Length: 194
Image (cartoon, rainbow, N blue to C red; front, side, top):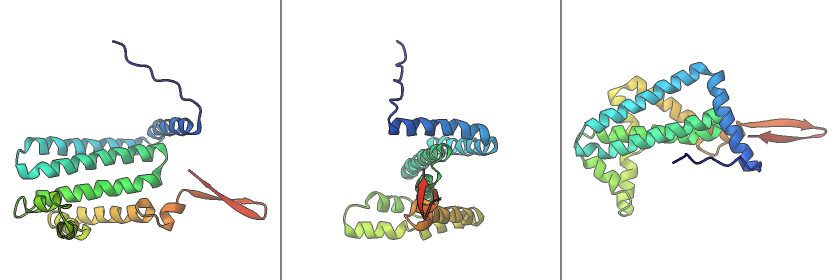
């Protein structure tokens, strides 16, 4: 059996965009070797977390495993976005990495095991369950769990979380205008961007 051969890009605007994004991924790795080395290190850390949680057979850690898998997947998506040149679009995905990680830790460190997991799993049972889950998993609460184990790391992650919101995870002026370029054109101007 031979591997299927992908067809050539069609040359339409979407195919051109995807081809250029892929090219940027490769060029970014070559031009930013120190950053790529750091990304490889972070990827190895995510894989180590996977190994650790797979060996721990405590049923209360099952939602933690799922959340860390989602955090890792989101991180990989953010890496692809960043390397392809879509940095602003990566911020909402990085926010998802942080939130999934904080939720996972909050669940794993439940002082009364399975209480938080039940709240999280039953979020959509009714309005009261949703409100309870929103309260239990408020960013301030999940960050506080992290801070109780490592205050410095929690503060650093909070800074990154705040940056994601400022630079694209919410549709605010910094996120929307970050990738824009103002071009003077006679008596007026135009805006361009990625």
